[in-house]
Image 1 (tube, rainbow, N blue to C red):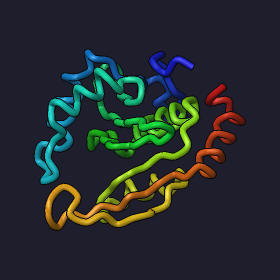
Image 2 (cartoon, helix red, strand yellow; image 1 turned 120 degrees about the horizontal axis):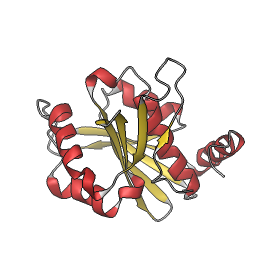
Image 3 (cartoon, rainbow, N blue to C red; image 1 turned 45 degrees about the horizontal axis):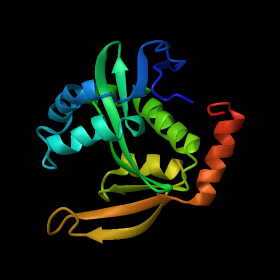
Length: 182
């Protein structure tokens, strides 16, 4: 399966051909920078550094996905493999698109990649108050396995959750049955 192919994913809410999701490419670096400014610029968390974004576009491009509305970048998901474990580092979508299918399409692209690469687990790290992200992780089968203190700075608490091997097998079977992967 070539995940670099641009695919239009169906949307029953009249967004049928509006959104596309594809793997990153080196030319997407400025798109990630702009999305970072728009999404995180006023946030106390801060934006991802240039080096991190270049790692995504130049070395892990086939693991990271960009969502577009027409030709406009509106969101991304950044993942990194380490052996048979994938780390979902960031899922970010512009505010006006958060109630559309963009989140679903990005997660679907990520899960297709994990299944196609026969990953054994997927790990997430999120703040305890990010209920939207935690709900998405839980719907994928992730379970909180650890509370991490002082992660980025003193007082910063994160929850580490994992989609375990058995859950990846369940997802693999479901995606195969739905013919989302071969």
